[in-house]
Image (cartoon, rainbow, N blue to C red; front, side, top):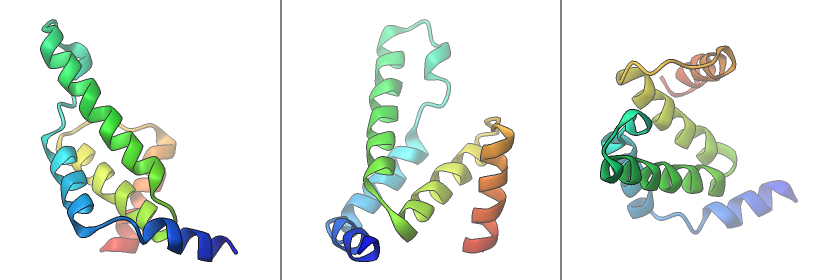
Length: 97
């Protein structure tokens, strides 16, 4: 039953939504919380909310794909990860490479 539910939920995610997610992750202001400029901090929080909402919405294989995109950009930006996040990242790299 879960697989059917996952399929039905993921069916609503269009290629355009994936492209928008990837664009948002790539343009994400990873250091928004360090900014003294309220506008920059607000933009970063809006991007973060958008990214997290998408990541919560996807399930199954799509969830892994979303996490891979997110962690890949984190690594590219040299953002530190918790040991648990690093373990997940290593598993996702094996799966998608």
